[in-house]
Each structure stands twice: as structure tokens, then as C-alpha cells.
Image (cartoon, rainbow over all chains, first blue to last red; front, side, top):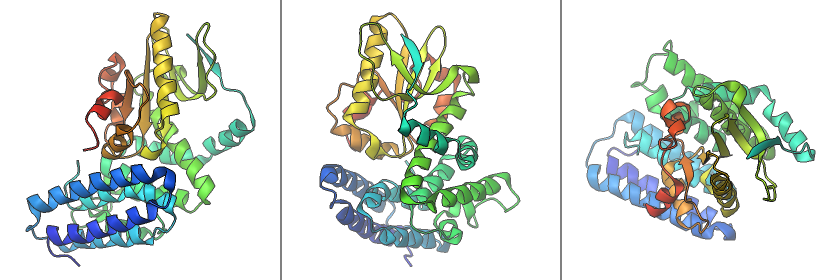
Length: 99
Length: 246
């Protein structure tokens, strides 16, 4: 499990990329998926830059690990698109960085 | 400007059955009084694959973890009830799940509006008619019909539901009302993150002048008296678009 905010974001970002890859298979939504991914990835990057060195307690690390596992369990591309807009909020909430 | 019940076609009859599902009222009652964190839990669990409550409790330590309130606390109890309702929705078949989620958002909007206006003035599935203007096919999910002003809401489960047709219809209705000298506030309510809605709106080309955007973060504004003045819901959609997808 990640022990710092930076490590958690790195793992969370990779899962975000995988969600994008699944969502991109819906051709009509390719632009939206691409934009959504870029926006939330930027948000993750911002948190990593600001708080990357910060230590992460066990509960928050477990929360992010669970969110990543859930994201990776989504196989339906339509649901992946829905999850692409939901998952970042879950991660950010666990990190105490909503907004 | 006048209002009319939508036609009771086959789709409407089926959807009325969904709206009448006790799970819709239960979830809406819980979510109307929920915090942003609790609403995010509901959205995530209703969207997710896992139906094991312990997975979701682990994912939301601010609601269920060591930093959360004790199990006897009201907020903790509400979080548990929201999780139970959300997982009940999630375990329905994909199509029913999708319909239930939409109906829940509408019911939440109705409950929040009832804090600000008399319940008798809130209606579901209504069309708004204007003299000399062909009626729109799609009814408004929720309307507020007061003698001096009206409000029309289109409700969406996610940002992906925002599309040009909806925005055109809302903005056209507002424009027609204005041309008649009537007051009509129109808004799209999305049970999703504002940031995601902005992404969706950033590439819409529909005219958005007076359409307002209400998101997961600003739902409670629907029930505040200040919103009736027209400027407090959460800003016009056009403003969200101008803000870009950042």
C-alpha cells in the first residue's frame, strides 16, 4: 500500500489511465473521455506536486487501494466512462483534497 | 406560458413504475439530507461493480473509518443507510439500475425544491407551452409552477447525459418565456462532479445564455430561498463553459 500522497497519486493515476483506455472504445465519446481523463489527471498532478511528500495513514492508503481495485474491476466501457468521472473524486476525498 | 402533463405513452407508463419504486423515495430522502461526501458515496456505489459493503466502507474512511463518527452517530447511520440503498440499486439489472438512478436524481431535486416552494407547485414530467411555438417532445423532469414565475429542471445522473438537445430545449424555453414577458428559470441538474460537467460543457456548441448548472457540489442551493431570485443556483452554464475544462 502507498505510504505517501505522491505514491498514492502515482498508483491512482495509472488506474485512471486504464479507465480511459476502456472508455475510449466508445467512439462517439472519445473526445469526452480524452478531455475528462486529461482534466482529472491534471488535478491528480496538482495534488502530487503540492503534497507528494506527505505521509499517508493506513486508512487512507487502504481507501485508495480499494478505489483502484474497484476502478480496475470495471470492464464495461460505458460504465468505465461513468467511473472516470466518479473515481477521481473518491481518491481525492480519501486524500482530503476535494474540490 | 402554460404547463401540461406529458402524454402517457408506453415509456411514460413504464417510467412511472420506476418512479413509484419505494427504493427511489428511500434513496431520495436520504440523499436530500446528505453531505457531499455521502452523495459521492452513493454515486460511486451505484456506479460500481462491487456489492460488498465492506469494500465501500474501506473506500470512504471519512464516512466509515477511524476518523468518522461512532456507529451510533446520526451521520454514520445515514452513511450506512445511503450505502445500503445504493447497493440495492446497484444489484438491479443494468437497465433498471440506470432508470432508478435517473428517478432518484429527480426525486432528490423535488425534495430539495420543496424546502423553498410549496409542494403543490412542484410537478413532474410536464411540458411547457408557448403561444405560436411548437411544443417540445421531451417533458421537463421537474417544474415549479408559481403564479409569478416558473422553473424548469432537466435532471441527469452523470455529466455524460449533458447534450446539445437538452441545452437547446432549456435555453429556447427560457427565451420564449422572456418574449412573453414571463419569468422562467431553467437549469440542468447533474448528479456528478462539477469538474466533469465543465468538461462536458466545454465542447457543447448549443446557445446556453441563461441555462443554469447544478452539480453534486451545489445541489443544496435548490432548496435555498436565495435561489428563487435566479442568481444563486450555481451560475449559468455559459459561465461553466467559458471557464473551460480546467
